[in-house]
Length: 247
Image (cartoon, rainbow, N blue to C red; front, side, top):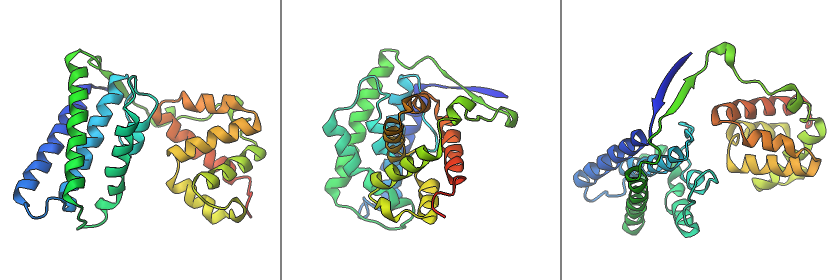
């Protein structure tokens, strides 16, 4: 087992490097200010500055999460961002999710300037936290050995009944805008592959737990650190898939 430390300044420095890279690219691509390569670094800078706010709250963000809308809207923040600011992040930034896959996507200069203003606002908030000494206590990150892999406890696993599986699946399809009457094993497999850990997944889990009457299942899930909740999601999917509900 290995341990290392991570602090708020680590994320802040990473965000600043990404933003400076964006500025350099902007200078050398004056006619392509919104070219995908520039946007990629700007979006990454905003992502890392949002993660500063997580570390201030003593929570290590999942390094695999790049959803800026989720990072801004999460309830873990001690001082939640204003609703209008969160909405602006979702509208202006999260819609760029496909820039990694398209080599040349352009946006209006107004959108680009909005994104830079968002970054400046986040930076100001983060700098104030650092100035006040918040988030300076390092988070100890533990890399687990294979024999320490997380497993859902038996008492919690007992709550994941076939009835719960049916309701959870129905809620998943409702949340993601699908007709619950058209559920197939193929669609469930797609949701399991791409939607685990998303806000929609969590919403469906909470609703299903409340409807079936096993709120403790969701409360347990909500209290897990991100690395264990990732394992929980995968094991939950496997259990429900094992019920062969759609065959």
